[in-house]
Length: 259
Image 1 (cartoon, rainbow, N blue to C red):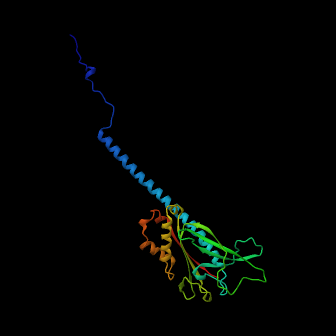
Image 2: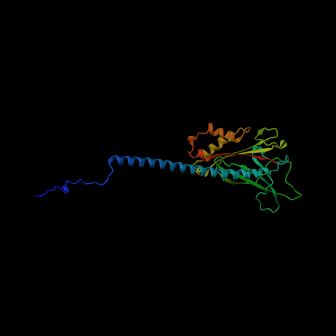
Image 3: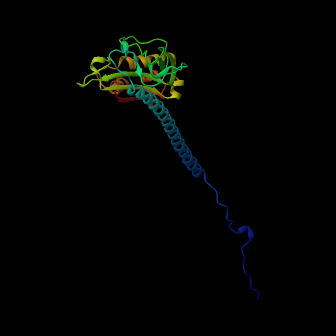
């Protein structure tokens, strides 16, 4: 008697196939990857914009502070006598106890200084100084209110599109007029500054329009900053300017005690 045992043939064995992604799984993975790429791109764009805005603010603060410090030193050292010119005709010009540029050995620690924005399309605040030279027996010409001539203007910081000085008197009134016989206690200085990158994108016509807007929207009887911020909020046509102007334009105001 023989014993017969059935064994499965090799062809009948079940083969284990290696794992593979289905079409649905591939589509899901691609979709998730695309969403992650979009989110990362948006985060990178937001970070880049924040960095650019931060650079613009730092640039503005550097220029604004430097200009206000320079003006404050001149104003606080000013010689405001009724027999010497000061802010003639509304111009920002006065004598200050700081030496001006001169090659003359008889120059004293007194000079005539002027501040101005220059031509209508300029965006650089200019400072001119004229050293006063005299002998101890021959002092400056007192008794005249005419501004001296011959001061040479020099550019300071670029990007200044608004510049205003007004005075606060003992009774609390505010005016753009300087009255030597009723000495003001405080000078308020306002600056509107554009960062360097935005300035490169502004044409001369746009600079002139900005300057005109700031010049005509300061009442002279209110805070300079408040008037200018109201102008930017209600009257400035933002769509006509580069988008970076929104973060690249900064208004500064400082109150300087007068001697």
